[in-house]
Image (cartoon, rainbow over all chains, first blue to last red; front, side):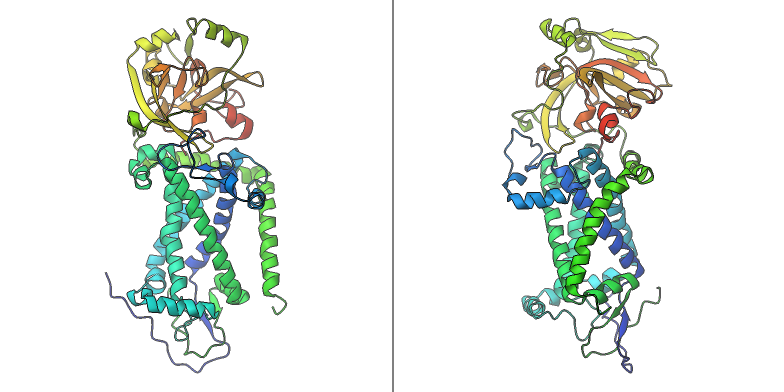
Length: 265
Length: 252
């Protein structure tokens, strides 16, 4: 393992106006947009599949004669009506929902794998997503939460760096939520349960895996809502452009000059 | 750039999402894209076969892990005059015709199936809709049945034709030879230590434990070895595959 390198020392340069830094590497941008479309398709088709049996159970089995821990019918009517509008395809069609879901699942799973490999190689994970012990200290988290409440999202010393809550939410999504989606999805496959019996064991049964798949989806939707809200609050044009071109115009805050762009890009 | 406001962007995003949603239906209706969408079936089959041992067994369970109440689905009673006669005679005259690409076509009674070496297994039944139920199934291995009939090496699929009718055509399903010779693939005539009930496919149904419920053909009348699925039904390998586009490979 290598030393936790400190973030590259910013060079003092004659500050040009406005300051533009290279923030998102190609792999990050590619995966971001592929994933944005894929997850949209997965959620829409997933809701369509869910409508075939909108009940959830814990354990190995669960069907209509068994007691669900949750069913969609318990949600308010307006929410179910909203979900009806979000299904892919637009009318109830289990066969076609499954076609969308199981084809785009390949993009989701292999896209994540590709992004993870690329981000280890280009050191995005080590450089930008490594959570350090001092960052998760309660005082630091509290300070970060207060900064968020003031709509102050950037580290003034290193504006390219993610703030701690941002970093934690990305880490949770990339390393926990999406992998859990993929693994619980695989655990629902009867052929995968034969091939990899440990899959069903780690989640405590196929119906538990299905329930966790649903809960992880809800959390992922929560992430997307917060993510989009913060993009809008942080300056949507600059943020969206930076995810397209990779270059990000640093908001007008007093700070030293930009870190070195990646030599590899 | 200054014209782009936050509110405008939110509106744009919502409109975009709406367009994307309605666009999905149009895309799926386009033959080229539909082909891509439907290619997941073969890709998933290839990947799963590559990742797994062909003989890997589906998880089996203990008696105390069984569903207290195993629901029925699909056809609950074929209710044709022919079938009702068989119910009245307790399926004494039911014969499973084993034919197609075989050297010795067979006509097996339920007693014949019971006289062959038996496999009993407590397995989980997963419906395409999302629910699961655990039950005990018993019957001869399909592999032994088709071997007894002298299945030829040119056979690539086994097709099951059933007594329940959909739009006057029998329900049918098909599997490939990997699953046909899988040890847990059985022609089950007993469930939970009793003769199969009408709701669960009496007198005999297929169990193919690494695939979803719609592959588990009930009320099996004919077992045919074939070289190709073309020309059978709509050519997609099963009633639901033909009718509404279910995946032929239901291992996922």
